Image (cartoon, rainbow, N blue to C red; front, side, top):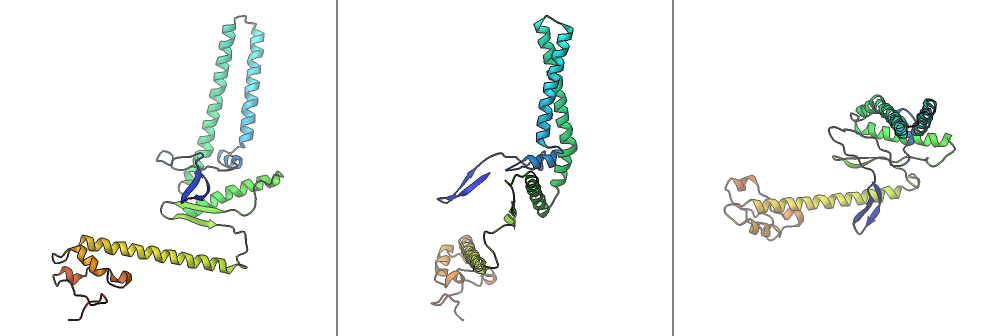
Length: 256
């Protein structure tokens, strides 16, 4: 998935390759950029070597068949085409067998280990694969990958958690930036907690009727109290049949 910001409170994104984690496929390693070094790590061979080997093998195999047909000297075109088809099928079966062996002996053991790793070690594996790609590009005089690496762990339980995140400025020279972010986060957190408490108190007042009274009227009386603390709270003595305490002008219980 490629993310490109938020427009009108909607996330702009583009779905690319996707993979479903299931019981049959409990783990996957996917590269969202340059994938050659990731495939080399997982499959044990550079994909460029695999592609070149397959291409050269097909050319060699086809040449051998043509040489055999020329030596046999068959004049029947249908027989020659049949021989070519059998030879091509045999080659494809051999290539498929090599692919299955590579998956069984290289890919599957790595995935078996990866599926059991904790989240912090999964982040380390991902960072190492990016670092490996960067090193390969540097020694190849190709600087398309390099610099600090951002590492983000996304899980159902924790959501998005930054393990490493680079800044375009020095943290030591800009302490006020992090102070402002911390204050903004505290204000957002407090506002969220206040809304949650208000909804919980409202749901409690609507669901519990004390001494046969209308719960909505109790909630209406509670609204006269100061802020969230004015929300009506059902206590143990109310449930015991003591009754609803009378409130003064400020919404506090009167002394009796």
